Image 1 (cartoon, helix red, strand yellow):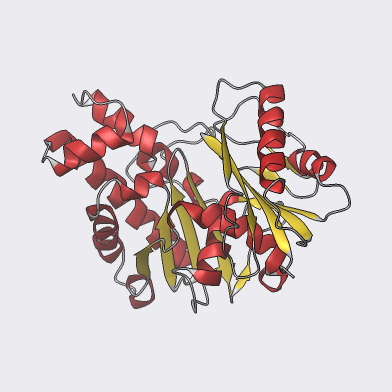
Image 2 (image 1 turned 90 degrees about the vertical axis):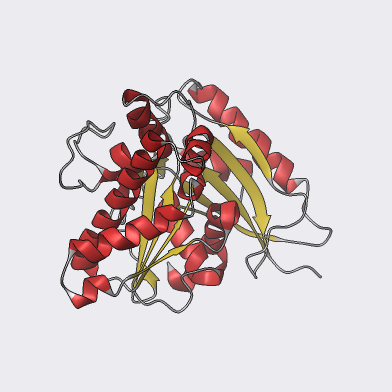
Length: 309
């Protein structure tokens, strides 16, 4: 008989994905489905797309398998007490009861909601690049910049569920306005869209992170400056986080984290320049070991690894 499965939902600023996750952290073949999100979608459209993807994943349930629970990783902020999400880059959903929507689609099954950054951290700590780390930060650098913390090997979501939201830590030397209302936040500097926007203000003619990656590889000066700027901001912010919670390791994933193999090395140099404290300089910055499956695996970990949450 198949073991118990988790229904995983990853809801982000560009897309949502669903899949079934087994107790080893593997995706069930044929169960992964994707739908668009984005700033132009209406609330009803988003809800319908979540329902479509969940039903498609459930259709791939192996014969004899049971659903142990549903895990949701959502772009923040979130409100755990209310079960609501307010993804910064999806304005149609402010205080939207996503946990309730999922519960209505899988009645009688426990549903757990956490911020997507914490899900990527849980996934990496479970079967990825964070294995064995005591104090661990998982990061997503993509449409936005998110993060999640494990301290002493256990999730540290905070009271509201937004602990580890490193994308909205301010970076010294920057004053760019951020969608959160702050200025100089890491997301405003180092996310894919904001890095491309900065490059375009300085003469770059491309439109996407993929364009920026190609230009960087070709030696374009503005593209190289944009990636240097993003990587430096990442390293400095990780240094601030390490000063606060004494990190052992940081794993970085997400689409824009792959803009160049140089990005993480730039971040490592910036971390080393950030502080003379040995406990800060010792922090390992590594690439995600889970590629783009990490957020879904982490949502599955909310069901399969309750010992870590």
